[in-house]
Image (cartoon, rainbow, N blue to C red; front, side):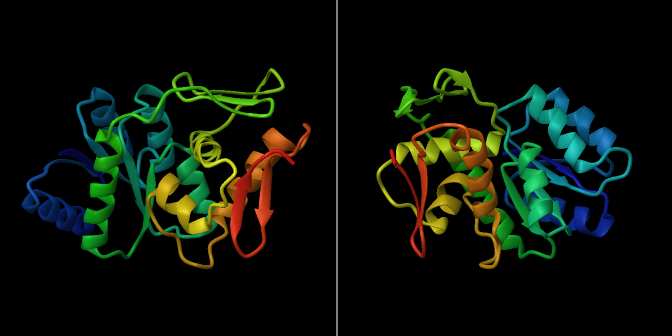
Length: 225
């Protein structure tokens, strides 16, 4: 893979550059945000590994601008900021995955393999997904409820698409992490609950019937009330 690494800590950058190169990846290195953004916008990368706290331009802003120009390139954020709100900000900025420092290099490689598989797997069926008066178009990324457009972030859209594809089935938090995030947060994290609440406010709060249901101790199910 051709990888862009944007990391301002010289020791970390050197370690990752060497390790990824030894894994036969081609790695370009940027030590600050503005250079990282220029390289990213030039295109041609299979993956961007991006630190959050960068001089010149924050990693979150780099992520937002890259995502606005290229919706497909996978972005993996590396950061010392490990609180749930920090993770949510990174994911909402457009990151596909989030790895908190310190981390094992083998875990980084596993995340990279997962992102590579996700990008190169055959696209999911593009048929319109429906439940009651809710529709989701995987191709155009348009969501409507009762004919009204619903604005979702990339992560909210991915979560809703997964729930719709599993409608009528109970899905656990582990199922959601594996299929929507392709990673594992710590067991005490409430990031799934946070995103379920985001979706409820947007697609259930002002509409009937309610479509997202919680089964205590089991997970969530999407069905008509």
